[in-house]
Amino acid sequence: MVVSAGCAPPIPDGGFDAPDPASRIYAAVRVAATFDRTGIRPDRATLEQLVVMLGSADPAARFVASSTLETIAGTDFGYHASDPLPERRDAANRWRMWVEELPAVGTERPS
Image (spheres, helix red, strand yellow):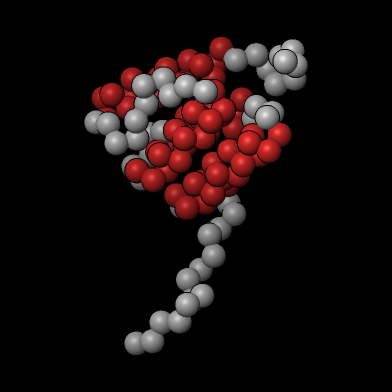
């Protein structure tokens, strides 16, 4: 069997609702890149999707989601993608509360 470079399928650009972890990871990376470029916090729905990713069975998805959230918030709320499930669940709940308490996008005052 001969395998040629470039035969792998491209990462689908399905976003957070895609069934495959690669698409969700790609969506999270885009969020982080946009935040790094603009400094504008993503909307609440996007942040909620990142928090959902913290519960993924895929450790890479958890890591990328937590890194993206930490970039945006400037804190990690004690979440570490490799921690045991109970610790991850507790920290994910802290992230969930942070998202719920945020003002709507556009209501914060510029610094």
